[in-house]
Length: 233
Ligand code: MN
Image (cartoon, rainbow, N blue to C red):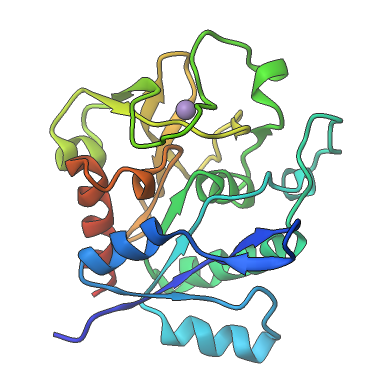
């Protein structure tokens, strides 16, 4: 069977003025039977449509804080600098993917972007807006548990992982505040943040707040990539 090509959102490093990619995203997709391809950050409309048709699915990667304009807010002083090109590319691809029911998997920023574009809001700065004892911003190495998530019964994530709780790594500055109306929560952290979602109306539109790409040694991480890539076939 032909392997599905998966479009990856480019990571941006403003200090080096570089677009780049973490091996974990590529390795996770490759191990699951897909071909990962990093997309250009600023395609024109025609190129965007061509790329959209070329890919069997899209991985919305982690990275910068989202521009609060995506959910109708002004940035607080604590909000990180936005990645302007990503903030334009990713909503456009998400909208196309939903129209054509193409699989999308969001990780960290990807979860936040999906929630914002579909009508939810974010905490711009967790430490000041949602203070808690839970460590959401761990130090490396990232293939360790930082906190526990409850996996909600009856969700496809629960069917996939067959567990009521999952220890996850955690490296995020923002998080879902109001869940978008069309999204279903699939996992919740100890301090009440929604850390996994899906759109039940789509073939596969899933997102997680943790970082499976940093923990491919864990069966749950590999299961997530495999579910996504299988949906893209
Ligand atoms: Mn977390």
